Picture 1: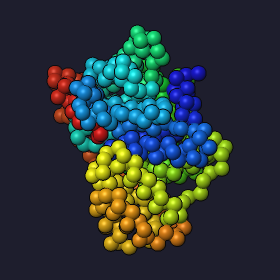
Picture 2 (picture 1 turned 60 degrees about the horizontal axis):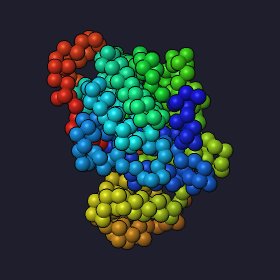
Picture 3 (picture 1 turned 90 degrees about the vertical axis):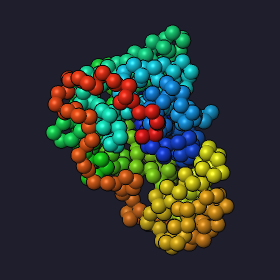
Picture 4 (picture 1 turned 60 degrees about the vertical axis):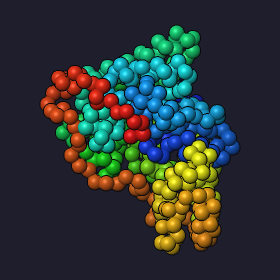
Length: 395
């Protein structure tokens, strides 16, 4: 069995939590795992990827970055996503993860559309420079394999997550997908949008289907990403595209029980119903508690604030309570405010589903000077490639 399929099998179902800055920390990953296990009688764990880890920050052992790669004792497989634009730095980061036994799966970020990333030639801008893209994937896979071999243990699979391209005039996903497969990537995950789309419009599931066809001769899985808001969406995507699995990003914001529904749907268990507000409030309180355990009594409740609107979308909640929850600074405050909700509300239905999180319209992609002139020309960029490496993890 190919490493990519083995990794999916290890998770129990072909469902992957997408890396999201400020979201997929240790607390949220634990919450999502708990939902999957509860829905499948402790059979399914799933695959839950960390926030984006900058290779440079990891190699420099930045304190915050080292905290971000920490995993729970029962977190398996341990999945870490790396970002980088310098093949040597990415390879060094991979070496550290393997030598120190910190990851069972390493994902490479070629999909981030954020301006501070693309402006440096990284994320979804990077596959346009096809030689650089190939070098990064090659060096990451080779380093993982050689380091693991020297230690006498299995190598963690290295995978690739990317977008269709920079914009509709600069599509890269088919060539990049072939390159990733040729260089030994265990799977390729495709978000069916370009960088210029950001998170607007609809994901192009036909492009995912086209990549599935393109990579069929290589025998590696293709995973689809984009517009999976419900477990029904996941089924439709896989049926439409032929993808071997799905990557869930914004669809789980304020909806961690989606992983229980997905795990049950794909493993033949009874699919849990969408929760009423009483059950939602219990998940909210538990999420806040987990964040407090990970980040402390001050930072934990504050980090929870960003999740309030997502959890309560569609429910009838007084504006003042919403406002105060978004300012809560302790678990006691959160408890008091949740107790004031009218908890006898059923799931709101369609009004509660659909886009959450970043929904800004598309725009021109920020890129290094003359980046689009020639996909093979790296003049100037390689002269000081270290300057293009981000020093802070998280995206």
